[in-house]
Length: 265
Ligand code: F6R
Image (cartoon, rainbow, N blue to C red; front, side):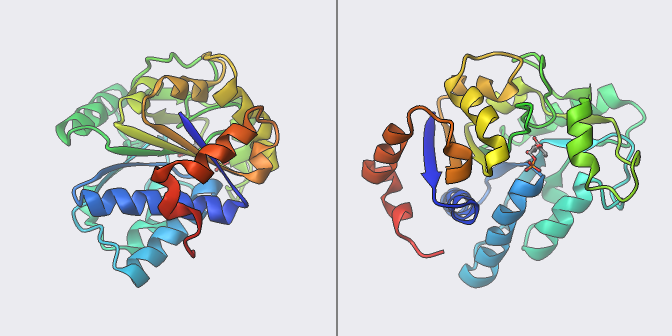
């Protein structure tokens, strides 16, 4: 795992978007794993701008989202399909037929979960998985005690996740309490992973996830097992990290980060 501290949330999101852009330029058929949530909005803004201004080409790219609520149709503004169309897909030259989310409207949810796993495999697996973290340590919707080898499945959300995400819905109670999510094991199968974390409310859980023990109580701690995982955070999220000095030194000196240190946004 490598951890990079950036001055603010905007710069952190820019760095993540730049890493995605680099991967896409190197492999136009990239299979990209995507996340939703407030943290990702900045990343998608940057990708849209890079498409518009720098001709970043998504025409051959395929995407698989981590999760989708159960029982929300795609045209519901609370659904993750709606979120992705609104924040990214409608503004870039991706073929919408190559954008996949779990089918939260399926009558047979177990079959839909199996099918999602099969499709990921058919496409050769996820090349680069983008992740955010919930304040209870979830990645995707893998709430505490999710098996570290879990696969795509339907899952009950915790009351704390319902309280946090419920604010994005117009009426209280409108938010579904179940979702389909890739499992922790599914996520760990990605060839490379980028976790983006910003804001002081995530400082405690970030420190537990990257510097604490690996435990199913903090699903994100499983990322410590992944050989190609980069964690990009802002100063506010970084305050509880013990090895900050080391992380800063790596970013300042390692050749892989040279192109990202002083570039303009
Ligand atoms: C959503 C997802 C979640 C979010 C997490 C953080 O697709 O994967 O794990 O990344 O809940 O959400 P925000 O960024 O809203 O704090």
